[in-house]
Image 1 (tube, one colour):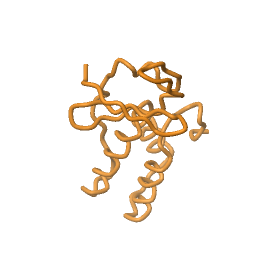
Image 2: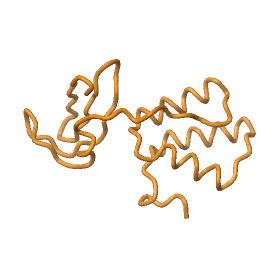
Image 3: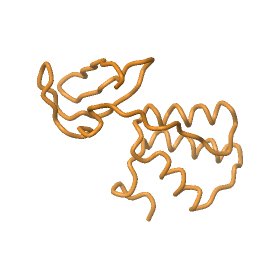
Length: 118
C-alpha cells in the first residue's frame, strides 16, 4: 500500500490539493504517478511541498517539481526535542523564508526562531 505513514512523509493537505487539481483538470494518473509524486515530496518541509504544488497548480502543469533540499544544521533534529534559548518540545518543521530558516517548535505556544542559512 503506497499511503502508509511509514513509507512516505508528506503534507496531506498539499497532496490532497494536488489530487483535487488533477481530478478537476482531468489529468489522468495511475499508481506509478502517485508513487513518484509521493517520493518527490518525501523528506521535504511542508512549506517546500506547498510551494511546489501551488506553483504547478498556478501554471497548470501536469506534474510538480521540487528544488534541491536546503540543508540546515538542525535538519537532523526534526521530530525531536531541542534545548535552545528556552526549552522547546519537538521541532516540527523547518521552513525557509527569504534568506533565513524558520524553525517551528511545538510547546504551549509556537516559537519561531530565525537563523542564517549555512
